[in-house]
Length: 572
Image 1 (cartoon, one colour):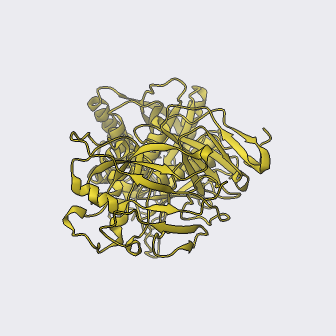
Image 2 (tube, one colour; image 1 turned 120 degrees about the horizontal axis):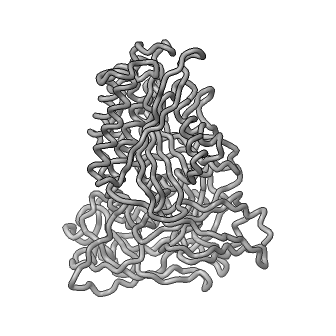
């Protein structure tokens, strides 16, 4: 069981003993070979719990990997031993003399998954002795499991917990093994800003993508946009050897009550490899609209709304087409969103009529701008909209899962769940799916500078780095939903003596699990427990409204969360 702290709630070891500002009791000490610095110079202990996180989090790493053995100081029922992977962070410690370090940054460490990797450099071992801390968090005979409060939510009542005890460093082997592959990091690194911006530029150059615009021209109008998207998907399909297959679905859309226009939803799909894994859909609308809402000739560049979303979908299709995944992954580009989301309504109806097991739908709509109307910048968040009610809606649970995955992957964007299906008096294509009972959510930039019908919604207002990060965040969530280990089944919470409860679940193909805890009324999971057993006894479950469990596989990929259970309603 591993504790994680992040963001503004780091633990300050050595700076003070006693009660931490978050309510935890903290006292810290260094191990004995103390050739380097005193505890007062150490900033915090940072623990990361899944393979694939460190490569992105530690770009300045120089010392490499080393294996250690450690033991958590927990009651007997929760004790465990393991070999974990440590990666030293900061500049080369071996180049610095003993005595002191100029910055607390060199005290950061990260614990990853179960693996035994040896480092053929004794200098790094010396640096490791500096970094290994033993923090006693006020243990008691009945200490509860280690919790990791997330940074943006108020903490619950003070909880005592234990942290790693003394560390034993094994002998260094002579033949180093390769470090583990960073599956998620390598995938996200393939997202290219230049490709994204080229898609935005190409779609904008068609002048308008209104559904009443030209269907036949190759240089302007909705027909040109349709052909461009088809060509891009076909290029991806050819490069993948046919792994991605493409098709179109026609529907008739009304421009006015008396005027119909043939429109097309354009689709690419990668067939799943696992029976009953379902289908994950990511979509974006490719039409645009001008100030004259029924005009097919008014200038409507639609760079942010929604060439940005189309670009992200095409880029993810390119990257993911290189492999197969447990679930079928479907990429859909909808027409006629701007006039009553007719395209996605037709597509959702087709999904239902075809009996496709749609597990999740992600709608990307307006994801490339970081300013609001007054120029205020927010390039650290994406908003996530989903249908209420908060406690029981499948769509809201999906939105919470996205926030949970972004946090645990330590993505560069915070996916902020909103307590609404969309902005006031606005809509998006996710409506069409949640209306039919499918879990669906919308990703949209944190601020809006241009309205959807604004003729100045051009590429100059797209922030390439933000669009790339938004695409990466979506890709990480998509990978977990489609190819992460399946969530545990048959979860039960059994009442025990002295007000404690026992959480049990059936094991799946996983190296560890994350138990996510949501306080009453919260939009997010506020705390979590990393655990590698399938049984957890604790008297603190009753403080939460819901519990869900996700599995982590040997690649460090986190799977989708299980269904939520309410500990206050458990009578088993």
